[in-house]
Structure formats: structure tokens, C-alpha cells
Image (tube, rainbow, N blue to C red; front, top):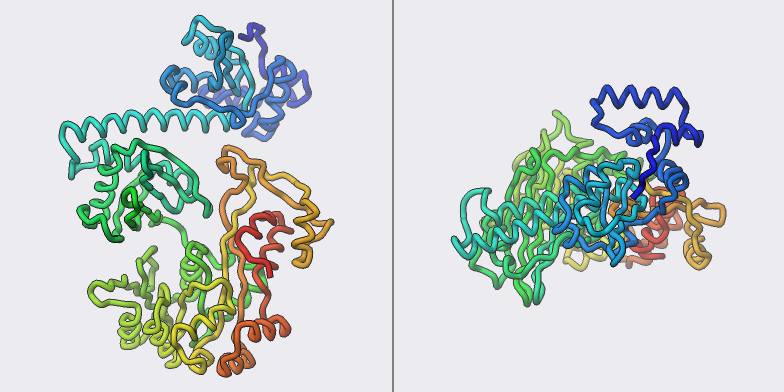
Length: 559
């Protein structure tokens, strides 16, 4: 233990990190806040010093070693079982290791002697050895321990409920529903877009997709899987007895005072059904076109395309590349009281004012193709088709475009020029494509460098040589995320779009009508400066410090 009493303000003054005026202001603010915030927190929040500077001076003056908690293997179960969370929180402490002589404790507040002594009294036979760690990291560990405790209690409750009463079908107070709320709440806190519940041979895993990448959240005893999956299927209003075929459902829940919709998909696997829930935030603000990630040139092209009086505009890319978000942003830009906009979607993800939205239901014969035919009798100006999946939908879209309507839709292709041969493969005649198509947007989502741990890095020469032709060189300053509690130690936080746009001009119309192949069309587009592959857009974002070369190459194929 540390027995030497030191005052933080005096220590920082002696080291020239703060001024006397700053100290007096911080003490005054602490008093105004009723001493609910520690002095160090106020210094950091006021920008007088960083957390790193604070820990550096404490480490030097108190001779306490700094420790990276995420480099340590912490037995969370042991910590949760042995230490009360209120004592650990009061001391901003995490016991991360134990041997015959000491209990090793990381803290961000080594001057809080009374709280640290309370931690030491929990295991009175061993002294504690104090290390310094970032407060953000300690809070993340505390949250994990609390989640673990809640999970263990809930699992025990679920098992007891199953043994004594079976699966309750009503009420949110059942243990299974509490567990579902916990799983969903944790995913939403981490900005997840999807939750995956997957049975294995001996256990079940819960993972969340954050910024396009899956991370593990929980591993549960397989014994509760049937109860959990059945309750989720009940929520989604799908048949709980049917486990042999894929099923789709939808449900809504209020989490922390906000309403969310969930799109549920089940698929049979060899160990049980894999469940995936897509999280749809009802209150999510629709992005403006300029916030999507378009560079100025592409934004200008896209604006021109969406304001065309008629034709088909396609947004292409794989599942999860942000196509629907781009379409919604486009509709948000052009909708007004003087035009009629109608959409056919599967499902309707977000409600748009001044837009007539239809939920496709193939079970009753309301397909994309039949919806488009009904739209034409409704006198629309703009039609949005959620996805072109078959010839009937493609043909109906082409007919709508040829009769003077603007049609927006999506197609699953790897790049913008690839949409043309894809439509021909689906059965549409080249001359119809040539007459109907006005433009194609290819897009992907790439992760952005975390702003909280962003730092300058050197790019290996082998990697630099690989991407030099796309606009980067030795003079380029490259950035990466170091990994911190804000980004869950991934180095990335949030995503942005990289795109390419092919405008169908007269010459491309002629090439399509002549059934020219993709390579011929792409060669002309490149030569005429009518098209630039999206890897160039990606490298611009690298140069701007928005993302990394590794991320661009992970998502986009080199040309």
C-alpha cells in the first residue's frame, strides 16, 4: 500500500502541469458539483491536461508502475465472485492478478487511500500491490464484471424457471425476457447493427456486428438455448415448433426509453437454429447526402442523377454496404409537397414523411413486380424498389422508367459496370437496358480510424508499393487507431462510404444496346473520365486520415 499522503493539486503544480488559477477554478467547480467529481476528472474535462499526462506524473512521483489492463489475462469470474462492485468502483480499481505474496490492483486514482485500503481489507491475509491504469479501461472492465454478474444471476434464474415452471409465454418479468433485454441492451450500447445467436456443440455464442465486424459478447450454457430461441421466435411471431426451414419475423421493443424495431431471421444448422436480429432504430436521423461520405465530384454526379425526370438509378454493392441508407438519403433530398414518391420495401426499415411506403408480402402475392404495376396507376413521380431480385421486377422497373418515371433500386454486384451484364443475365434485353438506365452507383462501407486513439504511423514499403498508383506516396501522412476503450480496442470507430459512379451517356447507351461486354464499357468510361474505380475514392480517404490502407484493401478489390 501507499502510505505517503500526497495532494493531487500540489503535485501537478510542482510539475508545472497546471497553474494556481486553474487549480483554484477546479476546486471551486468541484465544490459547486457537490464533490461528485474527482479533481483529476475536472482537470481532464477542462482540458488542463490529458489522462496520459496525469498518470505519467503520478507514476514518476509515487513510483508506481503503469499497466495496460488489456495486456493482462484477467479472471473475470474470480473477480466477480470475490470483490463487491461498489468497493471496486469507489477505488477505480481492478484486481487483475494474484500470487502467493500479493494481490495486484490497477487503479486510476492511487491517491484515494481510504478506498484502496477497503479493497485490501477484502482479502486481509495479503497486501495489495498498486499499479496505474487508464480510468476508461478500468470502467470498461467494471462494466464487463457487472455484465458477467447479471448474466450469471439471470442464467441461474432461467434454469430455475425452466425446472419449476417451464417457459413462461407472457410478461417481460420472466428470466428469459430479462436475458434477452440484457443481450440487446449490450449490443445497442456498443453501436451494433446485428445480433447473432449461434448454437455450437457444447455451448451457445452471442455475437454483435459493430462497424461491419463481428465481436463476441457472451458464451452461454447450451442448456438455456431452447428457452432463449423459443422466446425470441415468439417475439417475432413465427412458428416455434418449426425448426427445419428458415423463417423471418419482426418485433419491437423499448430499450432504455427508445423504441427499436428488430428484423428476425432463423436458419437451421446442425446444432440448432442460428438466429440473427437486425437492429433498426426508429429515431435514427436520416443522413443527408453530404454526410454519407461522397467526395465532392461524386456528390455532384449523384445529385444530378437523382434529379433526372425519368430512368433507372441503381445502387450496387454486397449486403451490408449501406445501399438502403443511400436510397433513403436520396429520397429525403428530393421528396416535397409537389411530387409523389412511392416505395416497395422488404422490410420498411424507416418511416419517411411525404412518402407512400409499401411492405412487400410475397405470401399474399404482393411482390416487388406487382407493387410496381399498382404504383403506375397511382400517378407517382418517383418509385423506389427495395431490391431487384428477378426478371419480373427488373422488367417492371424498366417499363416504369420508359414511361416517364424515375426509379431508384438496388442490385447485388461487385462494382458499378458489373450491373449491366447482371441485368442481361437476368433476362432483360440490352436495348431496354440502354433506354432505361441513367446511372449506377457502386459503394462499400469502410471503418473510420478511431478519433480517440488516432496516431500517425509509417506504412510498410511493401504495402506502399501496392497502392502507390492510387494517389499515395512517401509524403502521405498515414494514421491508425492504437486501440482504446472507446473503440473496444479495434482502432476503428464508425463507418463511412467509398463510392464510384457510372453515368450512362450516349456512347455507353450505344455500347449497351450493342451488347458490349463489361470490359469494353469500363475501358471507354475510364478513357472518357466518366468513371473512376472506388479504390481511388478509398485512397483519398486514407490521405485525409479518415481510414487506413489496410481497411480499404480489406473491403475493395484492387484494379
